[in-house]
Length: 292
Image (cartoon, rainbow, N blue to C red; front, side):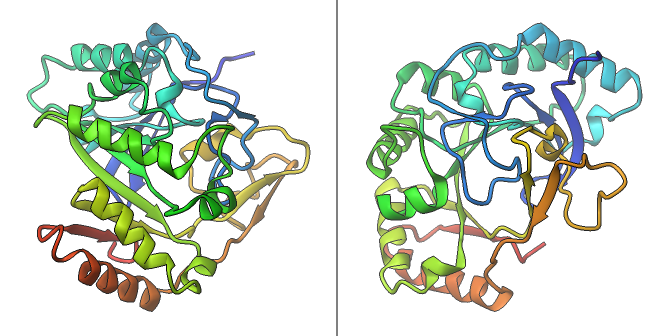
């Protein structure tokens, strides 16, 4: 059986442009969250265990093979993104992978930035922070201002709370040097907008963190639901939905559309956040999912 490739795409990201994906987790979906909206479906292994899931040399082998086969042109990429089959900071060799990719392309005229998409659950560990800071850009998930929302939306591993996430992000920000950019990503689930205190609480957390780059998202992709518990690894990079993949999706996958906020709600939410954060973060940059 041919092994899974740990490099996928490129995919067109509304956040970052043309993104080549690196999967440091592998063929079993593994994360410290099991988010209600996760494009991977239900996470198979919810854990905070840090270890080597995918050998660094296999990622480099896959990069070489995909480029040689015409799968991507390095100079056409806008970003190389660590995400894939779960939480990338669970990978003990994350920094080694980042450094190896930089070395592989060191002689190119253009240097493509390397990004990590993380749920920020592991950042209380100074070693995890040090590894993550090898990247040029770190996108930090911040969906919940309190533990009620966290349990509902993100379904975290035992011991993970909003307080531990906030603490880790604050320490990362303190450790961060000028060559790494931090940004927050919020996935907005419509039912929480019905709570009068939600936005105010979210703004309070953002103020505490002091990060002035923010992305507002909503689950516009249908969630793949496995009827057998098996993982369809293609979902890590291909944004399939109902009717888009009937010829290639396995029989055990069904798609479920999730509730989303409307364009009008998104822009109203953005305006309200700007108002709430104006005094603390006057240079706030917000990217809205509907501004594509």
